[in-house]
Amino acid sequence: MTMSRENRAGYSILTVLGVLLGVSCHESKPVAESDIIFPDTDFSAEADVLPDEDDDRSEIEQGIGLLLREHLLFTSGAGVAVGIDDRRTGWRFATAAGASDTAKETVLTTEHLFRVASITKMFVATAVLRLQEEEKINLSDFLVKWYPDYPLADRITVKMLLNHTSGISDYTQPDEPEEIIAASADMPRYFEPGKGWAYSNTNYVFLGRIVEKVSGITLGEYLKREVFEKGELTTASLEKEKGLLGTLAGGHLYANEHLEPYTGENPAWADGGVVASVADLAHFATRLFGGWILSTVSLDQMLSFVSAGGDVSYGLGVLRYDDPVGGEGYGHNGSLTNYNGEVVYFPKIKMAVAVQANYPVINDNDLLRREILRVATRTISPPRADECEAPEFITAAADPPYETVRFKGFLNSIEAPFPEAGAGYFYFSNGLGLDNLFCGEYAFYD
Image (cartoon, rainbow, N blue to C red):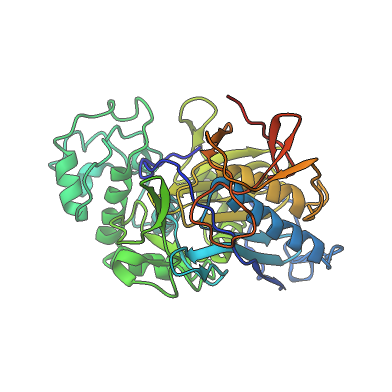
């Protein structure tokens, strides 16, 4: 369910077997002022954190690490990291697998930062709602208040920008914010304001400039003061304006049938310019939807969804998710040509899961998050390295390439930590190929 147009890369062949690194901690959290989903919950200081009846999660954490390594094998990936923030017990866990740079063979760690792409929209929407709480803006305000000469500005509200119902076209050429806005005025509209839904990064370029005009400071400064600091985020920044607060994981893209290191510059701003660690992303989700940053009224507005087509619903900078274990969830995904990820908070179990990859993995992150959630909640037993059995183990390159529902590529030896080409390892049984990701759920087809 990737809403961004930023990811246009294809898939090819190169596997990186990484070193698994993990960090875990149990810590208490501050008292929330409100609880949007469970208003009858006792949030007194004494009842802040529930007793942790599952204090020893070493088996769970090791199992999640194994899922990450298998995920890289299946997707021919570079590196992937996951962060978990359990609001009920205070359990916070982050782990990473694979490489930060496949050419230099540097290991990806939980300390690395990721370009979170369109997840940035959650942060910007939060900033706009903070301005409304300060009574400096209203969601019903019209765009004409700040851009009087923009076409149909007297019919486009702040809320329409937030939930992509403005009809304003997505920009196709990165540029400075005001240049993007000026160029969009001459582009064909998707529809009349409020008469449909279409994802457009231009909406959030407008919102970034509105935040600056209303607050009197830069977007990066306002995000730092009103969102990052209130969310207890120590690694988050608006890269284009504030630079990095740590080491950025190297990006990768598919070129010439290989996964190639490529980081470059990120031209995105309010629509996709935030960088953060995976642990901070998960923590932000629990802080946001737990009521530490926004009031219950503001959260209710953020979670007012409109149909985005099919079974997709979009709120104010937020997507609605559904998970067999976690139930209804709220978050966002984001993709660039060389990074991909998502973060989702599930109020039913009060847990947030963030997944970030430094290669264009697209919807595979959604599948990985589902399996991680099943392991984290003990819905299934944590996987072990020797759990999957098969009569034959193929390590030689195959010709022609094999193909699965979500992958096409060559087989490769699992012994090489950084193979030059290949798609990882697969189990075979009676001519039917079963990959071992999550113990053989996908079959090859012709």
